[in-house]
Picture 1 (cartoon, each protein chain N blue to C red):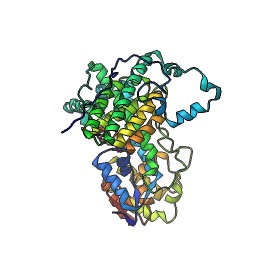
Picture 2: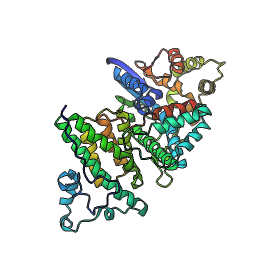
Picture 3: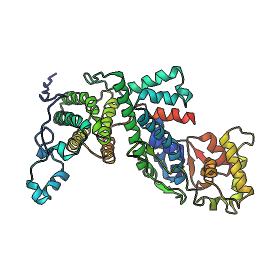
Picture 4: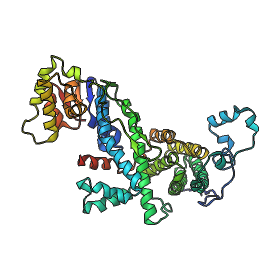
Amino acid sequence: MSNSKSKAYVETTVLADALLKPDTPKQSRALAALARYGETLLPVYSIKELKAGALGHFAWLHDKFVQTKSLADTVQAMSSMNPYFLAGRRSTALEALAAATRLLVAGSDVTGDYMSRDSEDADRYRLALAKLIVLSWKKRRKLTHQTIQELDCYIEAAPRTDKTSGFFDLSPQHCSVEKRCSLEGDLKAPQAKELLIALRDAIPESSSRVEDRNRRSVLNQLIRQPQKHITEEECRWLGDAIFAFFCPRDAVILTTNMRDHVPLAEAIGKRAEAP
Amino acid sequence: MDVTPIEIPSKISHSQPFVPDTGFKALPGTESSSTPPEEEEHRSTVGSLALAPVIEIDKLYSAPEESKSQLITALGLLADSVELLAQARIAAQKSRLMDADRYTQRFEAILPALFRCRKIGDGYAVVINSLHFAAINKRGEPLNLNQLTTAWRILRELRNKPFVEFEQALEYVEEFEACGLRVDPPIVSELLEHLEHEQ
């Protein structure tokens, strides 16, 4: 039920579930959660992360179908990057993907040779991915009541395909290196230092995760060397800390990544909720 | 139970010969009376060209040789599809739901052949592919009247403009989604999750 007084600050994982996981329980949960709040706010930082992450993965897969023109070869390529598809599971995955394109109507399945069937399946997935990438981008700002915290350093260009190669061009996926980080001013405001210290301290110093180490390092830099400008890469490393820092006081961070967001949010007196 | 026999259009054939046509008349489902409003408006405002000789659809569009035969096949199959969906709509409107579904099944059986004509273009292919996955995701459940009407109308437009741009084709796909058809491959979101695990 909608609570007209509640506000949600929508993090990237929820945006990805709502846009890129059609007809799944995750999408249903994300959409139901967005309907639950009286006001939903989407920071442009979430859009930037979506394009650099989940949308980028789908674009890679789309391009792999363009390159190989084969479902079997694409699954093989995936197997080299992902343990899920290794060895025994590869053939299962290939069968599942091929079976998912079959229409169970008598007389419809005129069997072609393996090569043409494999190429047809590849085209089906290529087109489905292209459709999903383009339409999800189109819908990104329509999911929430408001899109907030525009980033002057980031150009929100629509995904497009190269007419010659057929590959997706998602550029720019990151902020412009020529422009000063739009968030830097707020992060370096005098009253921000206390928040930055609390955020840094919420990340265990002993953590072996690369993302934790990088995030701590940038937070330390902001605290100790505020005169130093934040690079595009450092802005990305801040990641989850950005959501905790910029989430309005009267809103909750809506995320599926509770493990990372809860400690950060709580360290500065804010809250994170799962869909 | 009284079941009305279904008359299948006699001209359904994947190797149907091409009928020279502007795409606006003659073939089932694309008669001048069923021309979309924007086409009628276009024809009524071309002045002296309104009396010009009709242009065959394969001359109207500069199709490469490779896709020309697919275009000819697709136009025939699209005409068959439009006719079957029109019959399904009529049956559904009269609450002859079983008949409506039988016409729909025959239409769905044409979808793989329509997809094999995908060299016509990605715009054409994404419309057909979306209907294909919509049929799979229905898992045998019949299309309702609104869905039948949307598919019928869009395929009729596709037959008139088979070289539709990809972006415009996506507007058709959005219409499929708006009437409750689920047009994505059932497994596509799992692919994303596996790719995310790699990160």
